[in-house]
Image (cartoon, rainbow, N blue to C red; front, side):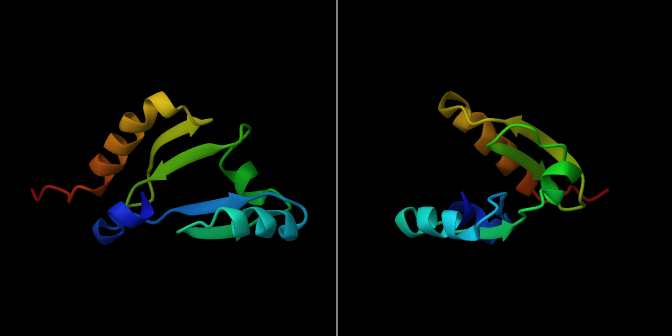
Length: 95
């Protein structure tokens, strides 16, 4: 999604809660990510966004508003997730 929608303004940030960042580094060496990874071993971001299931996705709009939240990842819902991203990236209509 990052590569597909970057030019439209999408920024994906993953938050890793591993206590030891080497655990994530080992994983990312095998499965490289094309987006930013923020290490948060204290869980501050998860706590701030009330994340209690991993993985979780939070879509935040251009103005900082919460647009959607998904607990877990369901392959069958991929089209829904992408539609929500496309909707969030649409330019605001001028009044």
